[in-house]
Structure formats: structure tokens, C-alpha cells
Image (cartoon, rainbow, N blue to C red; front, side, top):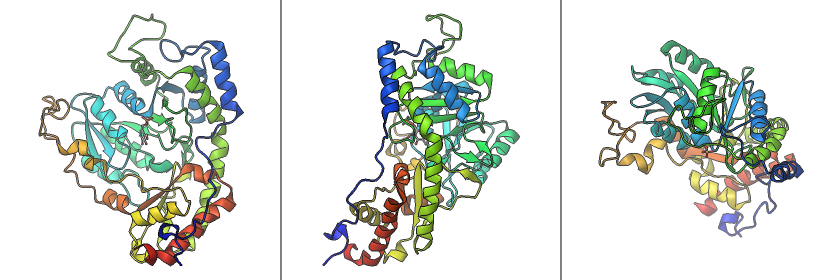
Length: 417
Ligand SMILES: Cc1ncc(COP(=O)(O)O)c(C=O)c1O
């Protein structure tokens, strides 16, 4: 009789892990309050005094040791606003990692700048500072490190590179609200940082975004780029820069205020449970958590990342392993299937009239995003297994099932080869 669920055997786990998104009375009360108040709009600059959005901005910025929080409608436009506030535009080069969600690159393209895509470090999955150094030219204006999966990039080195070359550093912290590196909170290390509150994220209102900064000038500009180019104290029809409406709604801010209250406890639970899981994996051969570089004090664990070695699983491919683990009732996926440079959108550059920035007369150089070689990311995309963050909020007894399922697959891998 077959053992593995994928081969027709019985499923190891039939009950759900922690359900996401999480909701309790706090969200319901906050939302009801907004609905009844009939103040559903955060104001013409996007966070007028007395609104939920203003309160969220203060609390979120405070939680990240930042002076300013600027809420907006999603994490993609948060990046775009940060770039525009920093004055990045036509013909500027921005260094980004090739292992990230498309937004990190598309926001750069959105401001008509050129993404220069570089490789990451295998054991952190974060951007490699040596590759950043190598990619710098006289056109480089900014770096966007992505705190991948919730682990903080090597910010000491990145800020040092930024200082030496006069570059703006924008932390893409969509995966890492609340993470801490050597005592420094994500969101307060770079010149600007951006966050996403899309539904899969660890704090969510379905959609939403935030920018943090400690620089009053950048904050003022971000406010203008968030809401139609308006300035503090000026009227509805006075616009100082070309900008559109990227505001967040009051109902979303009300939800996010409730979610923010839980972040501290969730951080503690996830870090404890990650250590508990790591102890299970230590007893196994062929699978282990991404080790990191030892510099992150508090990991946010948006993604619990595992390195998989098929040789230790009788040659079972990573994709087949993930299918088998899911079939046993363990939520998991393969993560990003390839470096962003392999996205279909970059394969036809130069073959049509895509316009600026791909055929930008102000840039004057050939752009070949698809031709960028990223061997470390190729390997990461081939052997990573991802367990989503909400699983780490489950009781420890439930987490034991993860180890049990992996052992079951390893023992019976021949059934599904
Ligand atoms: C690293 C990263 N940056 C930016 C974003 C964009 O956020 P949003 O989906 O809110 O636009 C995401 C979303 O998944 C992300 O993972």
C-alpha cells in the first residue's frame, strides 16, 4: 500500500494551520467606527488631522523608529513615490536584486529610470553588497535592497556603499515590518523605506502601502507625490508636481490600526516557532532553513525559507517534493520561479517601440535586462521551499506535523519519482 498522499495514501494532516488573514473584534470595531463616523476619506493630502490614516502613519512610523509615515494605496506605488521623492527619474540607474516581486523593478521603470539587476547571497537570499559595488556607474542614483522573506539585508555595508557613492537607499520592506538588525529597525536605516499591506502580507487591509523616512524634505515630497502634487496648508486645486491620487481609504487605515496592535506579539511568536522548527530540521538531512548571516536580531518571517537538496531525497525534484508536502496538508510553495530578468516582459525589449525607458534618448546606452546573468538566484529558485508566515503562528504541536511530513516524504520518495 502506498504511503504518500500524492500516491494515494492517507494525508498526514487534515486540519488547517493558522488562518490568514486574521480578524477579530478589533478590526470590526474600528471599521464600524469609521463607517458610522461618515468620514471615509483621509483628506486631500491623504492623512488630515483627526483621521485614522493620520493615526496609522504616526503609530506605524513610531513602531519603526521613524519620524514620518506616509500611507498610500499599495506597496508598488509606495516604491514609486519614494523614488519620485528622492528625485530619481529619466536616465538614472537604480540597483535592485533579481530575487523579488516585480514591483521592485516596475516602480523603477514607472519613473522612467533604469533597473540594474544584481545577484543575491545564497544563504540570505538578500542582495549581495559586492554585486552592488560592481554595478555602480556614473549614472547610478539609488539602491533598493529588499529584506527578502523578512530577513534584513546587510544594511551596514549597503549604507556604507551609498555614502561613498552619494546614492539614495530605499529599503523595500514589504516582507519585513518590525524586523531588526543589530538594534536598528527596518524602515529607519535607509533614506526611505516602503511597505505593503496586500492580503498575503503580515499586516493587511487587503491592499495598502506605507513609506517611512526620517528626512523632513523627503517626507514633504512623498506627501505631494501621494496626493496630486498638493502641499500642506494649500488648497485642493493647487498642484506643485505632476502626481496622481495614491491615497489610502479610512476603512483600510482602521483595519491596519487593529493589525498593527498585534505585530509585537506576532514577532515574538514567529521567532520562537521558527527556532522550534529549525530544531526539527537540524535532525534531518537534505533540508534546512536558509541560515542568514547572523546579523538580524528579529526576523519577520514573511516567508519561512528552506534549502532543499534532491540528492538526499532519492532524486525527488524540488517541485515534486512541494507537491507532496502540500498533499500531506502542509501549506507550501516554490516561491519565485525565476530571477525577474526572465519575466516575459523583458524578453522582447528592443524588438518593438516600448518607449522610455527602454528606448530612452536620455540614457544613451543599450538595456539588456533579460541578458543579465544571475547564477545564485537561478540556484535559489531551483531549490527553495517556502512555508508562508501564518503557519508560524500555529501552536507548536501543529508545527510538529511539518517535520513528520518531510520525514514521511523522504522515506517514501520512490513512490512518486
Ligand atoms: C518585495 C515586494 N515589494 C513590493 C511589493 C508590492 O506591494 P503591493 O502588492 O502592495 O503593490 C511586494 C508585494 O508582494 C513585494 O513582495
